[in-house]
Amino acid sequence: MSINKIKPEMETNTAKEVAEGKNRHQVVQEDNGGGVGFCGWILISFSMLMILVTFPISIFFCFKVVQEYERAVIFRLGRIVKGGAKGPGMFWIIPCLDTFRRVDLRTVSFNIPPQEVLTRDSVTIMVDGVVFYRTFNPTVAITKVENADMATQMLAQTTLRNMLGTKNLSEILTDREEMADQMEHVLYDASKEWGIKVERVELKDVKLPQSMQRAMAAEAEASREARAKVIAAEGEMNASRALKEAAMVMAEAPSSMQLRYLQTLTEIASERNSTIVFPIPIDLITAFFKQK
Image (cartoon, rainbow, N blue to C red; front, side):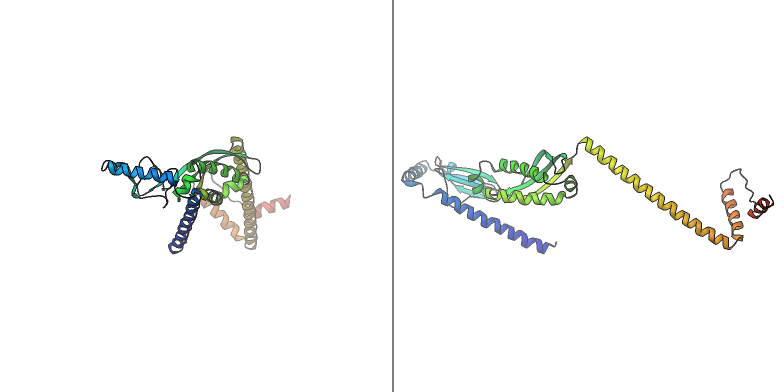
């Protein structure tokens, strides 16, 4: 796939995530209801007055800074401040009334602990993997789930067990990339309601029981031996056919047998041994047997 094709897809996915994040943020604001109320405005006014009285010391408590890869979700009297997450850079809070939570937007990875899975063909295996995800909506990640990171990890473990339980051992060993893609889509569909985007899932290792490893090794060795025997038999058959054709050629020219004798003597002499071979014409032996 070319870069020109990949770039529009990335832009489309980003636009979808932004739109989904805005919609969920609007839902969160609607759930929060109206403003802080009459008592809330009294507390805010009193806090602003105290800030002015204690100025400039209070300014060190009012301004906060978040990094480029962070966002701050501000709660004022228990309600999310309008405008959504703040940052990056400097933002304003009211001491004693506002609290804020930092949310990291960088991609996070975690290892899925080895999971004992019973496959569809009743084989017990141990499978582990790694998941890469990031937070694309800090407000939803804070308000919709208690601990988005822990929830994503638990969801990945259960999804891995449930998905591999519907596959045969041969499918798990050969179609690991396809299963990783399916698991990525399942995790994203479940975690996008929490403001989490699962970017990649990889299956690291599939561990088989020792008895299964020995059985598979014996099966592979038996199949290799069977193929070796078939290849040896085919070679013998081809060699016999070649000898038959050579015998038919020599039968048409009897003098070629004498040339073959001389060639054999040359090959024996080149080995520097003490064996001396005297070729005897077959015609003499044939005549001797006929006399008997």
